[in-house]
Image 1 (tube, rainbow, N blue to C red):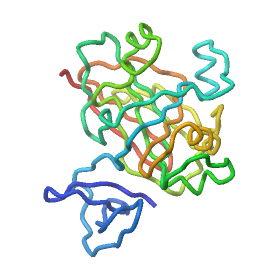
Image 2 (image 1 turned 120 degrees about the vertical axis):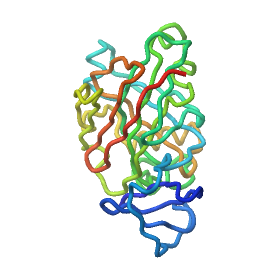
Image 3 (image 1 turned 60 degrees about the vertical axis):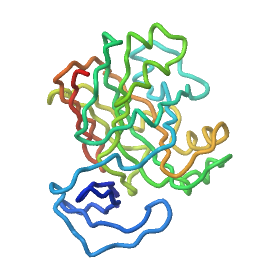
Length: 252
């Protein structure tokens, strides 16, 4: 099932996506909700970020092909960093190119959405704490990343975490095709079967470090093919079974 957050008549609702329509819900998908009788064409509402994470726990290197591309040793433990909630934007929102950077890159990623509070979760129980999955673009100021010993500045700018267009609950997270197109040209193409660390393991190990709350996101790293974006570019992250997240790059 596909769950979205939408703005309709200046109010924000959760909704269920069916083809080109959205059924509005009363309540919170992470707690309790009821289905309303309001069914709207999807093009009559604005898609918002599908959840409101308190944090995005991000994995820095998790595809075997990306490690090979960068000539890096496969890590023994996930390389983790945090993207702030202030970096989140939704489908069709704009990525703002910060004046501080001279090279901003796209990174298509498969994102896990947490469904209930998770702390010290065992790997074989991890799926019970996952609500679903969405697309994420881990936008990165590459020149700043290369300057700094840690990645907060490079990864944390406002608008540097597009997510969406919605959350899919029925998909195999460890065997899903992922692609990125820049101005319609294919730049990244892989499958999550190339994960170094699988989704259940990531949920388990990250929950041993920090408590994960409903709506929080774990983003699982990017495949090979990363590259720069420029003002005016259109970036699309596509994951089979979920959909396509589209954003345009603008000047601040």
